[in-house]
Image: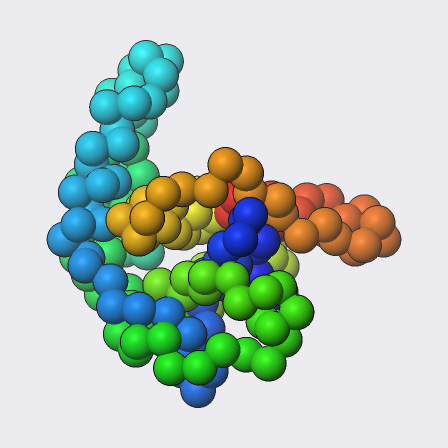
Length: 170
């Protein structure tokens, strides 16, 4: 799944267009947050950015959002979820009606990036989508104290070699 539990917040990176639960996203504020967070990265990472500048994972152009491999044009073109909280999934009642954050729809290029991560071991989309998710979460209220990625069954982890939810949460 694409769900990540975090304290009393459930985060779903991308939902299908029919079952979207989320709120409108201020893309300019997300871009500002991403650029601002670059000031907090360690000096060794800043040096590595000079040697190997960020490149957008979607278009290959220079990344212009600080440390994240994403450009402003592709950030703006992401399939942002623009629906208000319309309904809660029936299973959500089990969790005591947690807040649900769904910033993106499961549509190109997000769907392709998630499949590349999950089935082909491409980790760059996890860093980018995780950063976008962190920005939206930070702009929506206080960040949770802890993210706990959903564990994979031991056989699936052995076959795949990594847990994609852990890379998104990281």
